[in-house]
Length: 185
Image 1: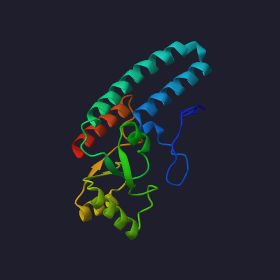
Image 2: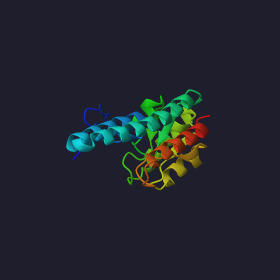
Image 3: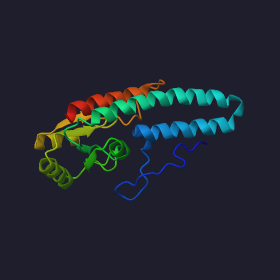
């Protein structure tokens, strides 16, 4: 068993629990790739050089996409966002975005009418134009908030489902960059 997040400082969620979504930050994903590569090399010293070579090549790709997002984020006119659930704090921290509210604290736990009303007030008060849903979950709550507040629903992918090929995560982050560039222009 490899603990991919070993030695990496982890954030707490709104309930004080450790937020496990480290990989959603590209830097977090890089750290996890390094931990996995190092652990595989220890477990299988015969192939250590191959693990290092492969992780170095992948980390280069990750660094490239991270730099693209950082460069684009400089031009975002808005920094305040509302996300579907608490998957994006590491991403937001890395790219200087502020999560002002979360639609569903736990996926599948629909917000109450009072929670929806509170989020609508937050959207209006902060002039938020974009709400971010996720492709893995229904966006009904986000659509309700958008309809009542005038915001638009966009989709950000935390990289937990979809294609299972070697560059799926990188494509998801590039798509997230495209979505954020449109939503926060």
